[in-house]
Length: 161
Image (cartoon, rainbow, N blue to C red; front, top):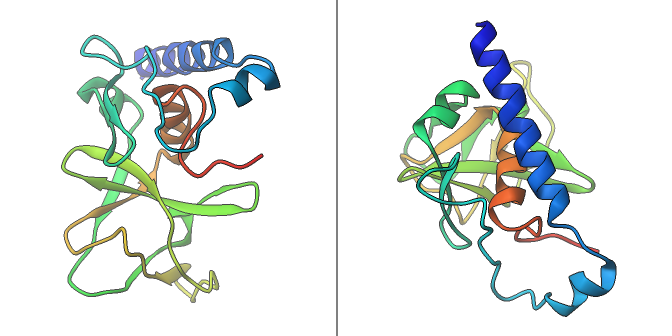
């Protein structure tokens, strides 16, 4: 347990330091900012915690990162809408997203819901980015957000100014 905590702490610090290192001035940001293609960071590779990153399918974590950060998911059943725990919603500023897990890749996606939980603290969601047998991340959302920012150089899909 102590080793897991130390690994988690060190990995988080490395991600945060690398992420902070990638930020430049606002002028630097605007020069490289075209909103079309997210660049994959040098923090991604076979020997890193983030193995692959592609803006269309998401990012893939190493088995060690996946295990050490105790990411938990829920498989979606058949249908066009699903009841999921309200704790699966990542809130960042005014945005609310879910993390989908498909074919080994995590991707932050948009969804529709009234965001009013029922007695079991679940909400009904729909999304064109979800299909039966996908998985929704229930735990580890903060870590995934940090990993996403690190994977795409601190500028993730759907960000705003």
